[in-house]
Length: 414
Ligand code: C5P
Image (cartoon, rainbow, N blue to C red; front, top):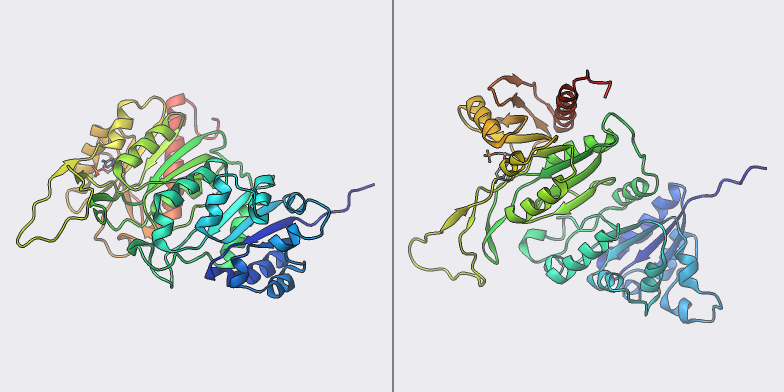
């Protein structure tokens, strides 16, 4: 006798933010994707979305604190916690805090204490709240338990960088894509299976005082593309990213950092047992020698800022290279190959991808790149302009070739 095929189940917990209005749309899309859905609405969520609209979209009665404490004889939080995947949308700072600290005084929190399937948080809150260390500490705690986060994103409601407005919640279709990535991880196998790849991406921010920083326009797209290519070829990937407007890619561990010193500590930690390290991050060369604790008042006339060099992370990795393949990026506006070769030598990198930030079509933030591979000896190979993903694939091809060469076998036999 064959087991009847059961539909996958998804629990959607709706929190108290204006973005809760997107939750019926998410429920409908999850059902279209074949999920049987349950839905919990927190007390605050019901201020934004009605039980009827949620129930209609979910095809189920909505579970609330009232249904939990009502006349039901069974432990509703335990039955709801059996879903194959759990998604918290319009996730508020309050809901994050309760989950991170094991509260169980309401249905949503008690259910989250009992879930066994993967958990995806889709936060939506005021940018200043999101950036508060208390919220970020809670996010880190939940991530350390394997929970995944999608957004919040910079969007129509304001920008995350300004400390005001709302971080836009991800759209239902993006959430469904993330859910599919969580529950049916394709577990790709490929030529990087069994290898650990660490990628750094994006800019760093070097604060002068609590509200002002030195940075650069790096979008993070190149690093994210390398990390996604490595993931799809079976690698265990750690992506360490500065502040960029890109969601955590599914299927890898993403660590968000702000400053070069934070980047250094995360990359050095992740690189310990790595096989390939790709430093695409646009690390700020300098940081404030004395970061002011208070916002600095405007003064008449010129101001001098005392900067001190940041540690060179790639060079540090190069000093303790071991068996790792180390890859860097370099932006140059002149004498590119010569300068990149001398960087590769100085930093003990296997090769450096040289690009020109001023070149049309491949400048900061674009989807394409045109790079030249430069080796420490000065040998160079200009690749044609191609998508960042394709550049990522070719970088990984080259890293594998170097590994094979070191092992004394031809690629494909490793
Ligand atoms: O010396 P330059 O900044 O041009 O070198 C670029 C390469 O070195 C990039 O791969 C970058 O990620 C890395 N780098 C680093 N630490 C720094 C500066 C750059 O790892 N402080």
